[in-house]
Image (cartoon, rainbow, N blue to C red):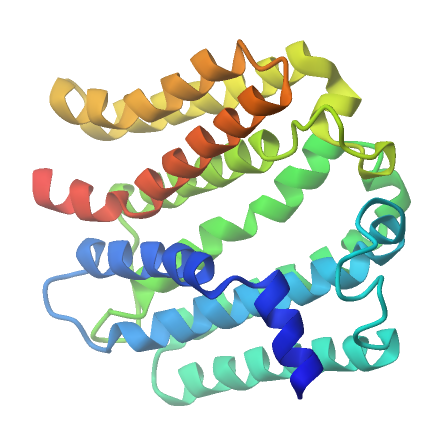
Length: 287
C-alpha cells in the first residue's frame, strides 16, 4: 500500500486534481436547471475517478519514453511492477463501469449513457484507438482525439443535476463544454514547449517548431473567440473578460525563446484553463 501512496503523491497532486475536477462540477451546477435532482458529489466522483484512471493509463503508456526522459518517475525506477500496475488499471476501469451501473439504477439514464461513452472513449485512448503507430506520428490529431472526451465529461457533470434523469442540452451547455475543450487543448500544447525536453518525448515545439506551435495555439484561440462571441453576442463586458487571458497567452508565447519564458507560457495557459473550467458560474449569473 505504501508504494501506491507514494505513486499517487508523486503523480497525482491532490490540490491540482481537486481544483480541475471541481471546475466542471461547480459550473455544471450553475448551468443546470434551477431545481437540482442530485448532490454535486455524484458528478465529482465520476470526474475524479476518470482523472485517476487516465493518469494511471498515461503512466503505463509512457513507460518506455520515461525510462529515457524521466527515469526518476515511479514506474521507470521500479516502484510498482508493470503487471501489477496494469492490473490496477483494469480495476480502475471496473470501478468506472460499476459507477456507471449505479447511475443507471438510480434513474440517471442520461448521465449513465454519457458516462458510458466516457468509459468507452477512455479505453480507446488507452489502446491508442488501435492505430497507435500511425496516430503517434500526428501529434495534433493525437491530442484532439484524446482531448475530445472533455466535451462528454462536461455534459455529464451538467446532466447529473437533472430532475427527471434526462437532459436536453442548451446552447450554453455546448459552448461551455467546447470552451473547456479548447482551453485544455491550448494547455496541452503550451505545457510541452520546453526547448530542453528529451527528443523521445516529441514535444510540440520539437515536432512543429516555435512558429508551428504559434499557428496551432492561434487556431485554438480563434475557436475560443468564436465560441465566446457566439455566446455573448454584443455583450462586450463578458467578451473582454474571457478574451483577456487567451490573448495574453499569444503575447507571451511570441517571446518564448528560453526556459523562463516557456514557463511563463505554461503559467498563462494554466490560468486560462482555470478561467474556462469555472466559466459556467460567470455564464449563469451574467446572462
